[in-house]
Image 1 (cartoon, one colour):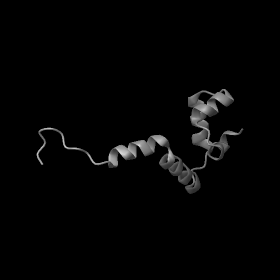
Image 2 (tube, helix red, strand yellow):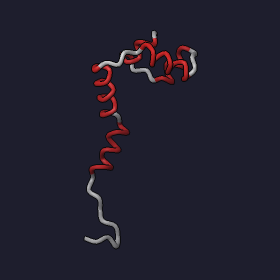
Image 3 (spheres, helix red, strand yellow):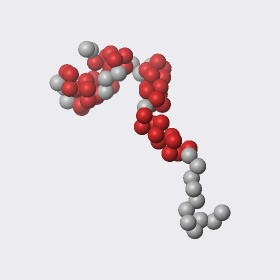
Length: 74
């Protein structure tokens, strides 16, 4: 797997380092130099974030109705 295909195969930086044997610092430097930052890549990242279980959980916590605490003014 070439590092430049990271966006297409959805590997994380630590996964790339594990596959290639590079350090995280080296993988990051390679990606910074050679990975094209495109609207398509950004859109894919936003979609992954929005559909992540942890994001859905956090959104539920932020949007649910909060019960007033004891002693809070109504």
